[in-house]
Image 1 (cartoon, rainbow, N blue to C red):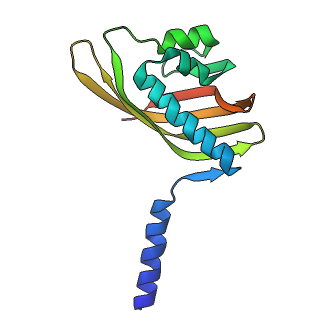
Image 2: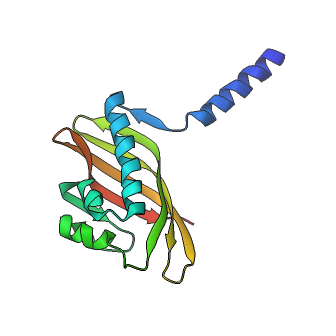
Image 3: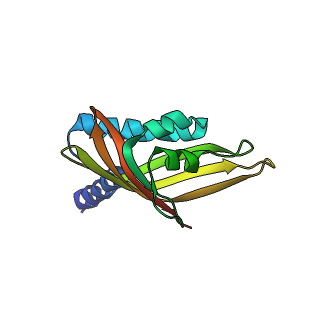
Length: 150
């Protein structure tokens, strides 16, 4: 009885530790994870050049409640914040990444905090799907869609 209880306790706790599922070459998964983390840092830093560099040349983004935005100019316009507004926190939390040749999909959750002109902050969270494409040896976002959750 004691063995059975211990076994099921270990099985249950190990499943909690490994909720994320990554499939594909480790070096590709590691680069996608690193690029996703860097993207969040670029958002917080308002580094628009590096945000754009995170996307493929023919990228498309699908912001919540908006039309599909295509190309670097539209993506730059979307991500450029007014001077009095900033993102103080942005994080991607992948649930699954699967590499299939030179493309990969990644889905999960995101969270963040916006600091407004009056100094107040608002936090937000949601879910996302990214289709990554390997361009010149680097994983970049080709399709990026997200929407909020309550």
